[in-house]
Figure 1 (cartoon, rainbow, N blue to C red):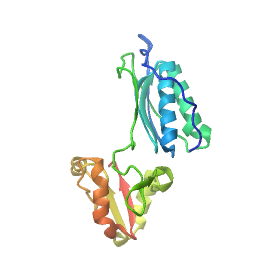
Figure 2 (figure 1 turned 30 degrees about the vertical axis):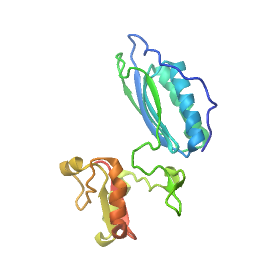
Figure 3 (figure 1 turned 180 degrees about the vertical axis):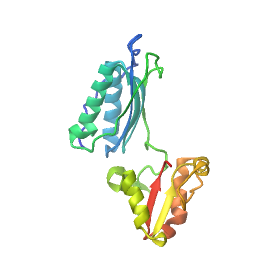
Figure 4 (figure 1 turned 90 degrees about the vertical axis):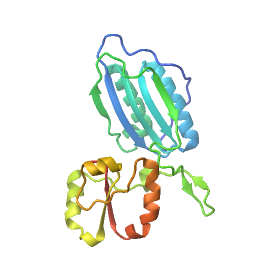
Length: 218
């Protein structure tokens, strides 16, 4: 973990600035917070949301943070700076890919809620399993995950890799797969992300030793 805020007090969120324009932030960051670090961050997020008069929803897990936050331009800028200082570029971590949009004057959320969860995305992993099958440590997704590719790099590798050495997996749900997908992409048959581990377990030998490329759009 890069660093953690010290614990603060929690409270309900005040209203977005009456009648004024708002900004909406969407973001996520995988960072090995650990269970104690996640608990501290959740408390600090509640305090920060209260102090800045924000509205939104924030998920915090031992593996990182994910949120959609609404407030004035000044409040969201302060929130962004605070998060960057803890798990972003300001703390020596990878830069957070903030998505920003205009929210108008209407409140999009009734309050500012911070929820502690075992995973940011509900795959059902909850951690790394030891020899006995019990979870003995938290997954560090940023270091143990795959390599993120820019679109042009993804396209280049598709063209460079012989078909017998390539496996393309569409990690969206089956409905989205049926709407459109890359040629030759496998459909994991998912209606929920928690079904992903089942697909991996049943196709592990087929994927072993291959260049596995995954996407969630297209």
